[in-house]
Length: 200
Image (cartoon, rainbow, N blue to C red; front, side, top):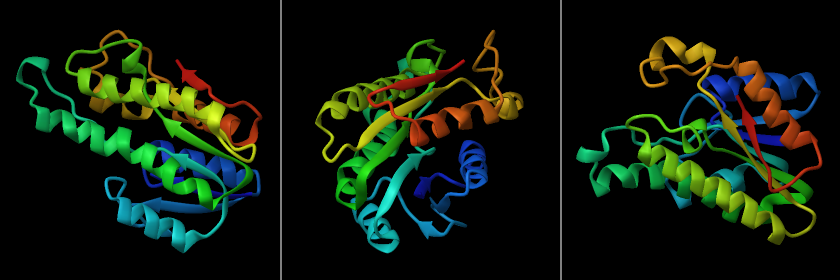
């Protein structure tokens, strides 16, 4: 399979690429820099240029998307817009603009996150966009043409990032990135659609 991984330079993205390469698939990496192709998820023009450059693919995997974290009492509409543009609209546009570039029977795999179901302080904006992505995936699955599938993965906080984020996720049990990457592999190589794979 020819698989395009957006966010391939991040902790989760690198683990996904490694696992899919072990399965002997052709991987094209995409991110803002240091990848096979560059892409800015907040730019429709950039997404279109990426797809034109890579041509037809069998799967798109997204392990990227920035969201705003901060107290609800001081959050501004502009702060919240960062989450909408960076994670929600970015991923939706990757699907909408990618449909014509996906081969029959291909798949999209998007990324959500644990805080939409298990809230944390200062995470309201991120939780909102994660829930939006999950709802989009569930609804879009029944309209996908040409046997195309779509799923999302909802990771817990990572063991590899625990030192950085432990203060936000008090009492949580972090998971290894390898376990999260395996959920992406399940989505790409499996047969299910409309699912949100929770990795807790």
